[in-house]
Length: 302
Image 1 (tube, rainbow, N blue to C red):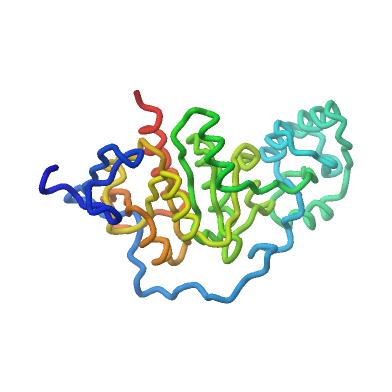
Image 2: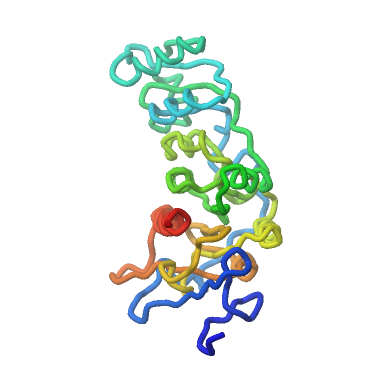
């Protein structure tokens, strides 16, 4: 083994792919990092939050917006009814209504005020579907999906992402990059609200999502299952120089504090995105897109 090889935080040897292949990592000399250092920022409160999610009382099975409803109609989730704003039988809504009628789903015209209330006053584009709430799966279910596809698991873990638009965008990126599932915490984070569904452009209908009590414990579980875990934070190795070909999970931190110290220490390593401008961090969903695209490239290259 080469003497200048980067030591792995768990094994004191070079990181391995599939818990056995060489996974050397190195950072460019003149590159910054994707995430700002946040040592001096306040940590999140330990006060437990309501199980309904920080963005309210809207985890009610409402799917808002034309793209989200279109993907819902393509999925197998039971739909109670489609609610359309009175006078809005134009454009893509005509297609959605036709698809709903074909599936035997009741279509009801309602006033805009009713849709506003159901959507929590988020933009709904004149259409809302009321469906059974999306069922969360388990971490084992996500690993089983990868096994069924004959692929090395690729997971995303959100360690306290609180903005529903960011969570929705991460879900969309994960699904587009072929990730097998996403893991979110039960507390102090956004849940699967209609805002998240809309921000995901309906990708939430096609991605397995697990909700867990403790992110650090989940990281430990994944490591025991042979999955390499990487915290996306400042001071890590360049993602472009990190071997992500085997089973791996990428941990994205909260908007304000990044990946928590405990989770970061629990992960196998830390990866960063080289930066060359003056701003020292990406938005969390933008960073997720870059990291997942690189992981997907490595997973699918010959």
